[in-house]
Length: 352
Image (cartoon, rainbow, N blue to C red; front, side):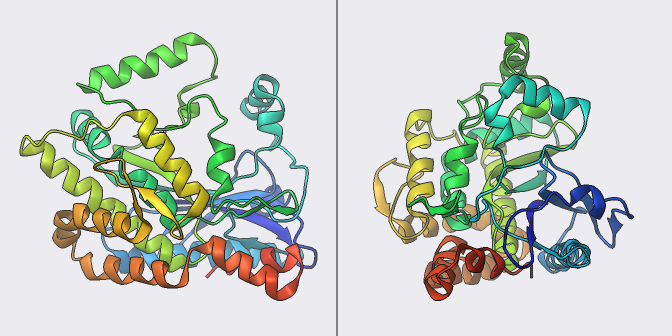
């Protein structure tokens, strides 16, 4: 698990470039590590691999609290927001690689201050991983809808539930995947992107879901960082169930859906626009359906894997809670209405 958090002034809610100071001390914790990101106003909490959701929950909470405790000593907070409600100009982290990214991508990189949730699920081989990517590609927009937590940006309400998704998909390698026949076909696409010369390295392959370059995992990257850590746990368990079910289908010879990538991309836009409070594109048909119907279809699709790991009831309860109370986007807007200030929306965000 990788959760990106914003570092905000404890009074004004404005992002502050405090990551170097926070990371000057030990970055290791009990089951987690704190790391830097592209901007100094962000910090990432990387959880150690977990076999069950209770262990994962404890590590997520410990990592968030450690980041927030260190921020508090500097007059700031570490908060789980996917974009900053308060306007700011980010300060890039100092490294040769980040310098090269800034030089190449200019304002796109200069303005990047979006926080995501990345979930890694172990796989046995690249062949299995590509087979999983083929079978989950049309389902990841629903995951985005469940995580939506970025309604504000640059001092205004964007009208979106996840404006982070819209901003992130300006990067040239972001978005849904095509279908691949083999792992070699997948690698050929990666090699083609690297050979084209537009990106610096394979770490800039920003697909909504991809094979990790550093771990034997499928990495699902589509989600916003979640305001509520319980939503993070729900989404992580749901993704593991989805990946596990997809791998089982591959082994059983079940073919993947052939839903076209433009339809999936539109489904992601719908998820970013309305979260769970509007229609979503059904992952099997591409047709518009109420969000609850698409979410329930995702849970049903993931049922074999959820049962195998004992997570079915946890996920059912978690998605029911999101559908009933809304995502982080709705809760941010409610705080803004209550306080009348963007700082209120930002600083009301709990790290758990």
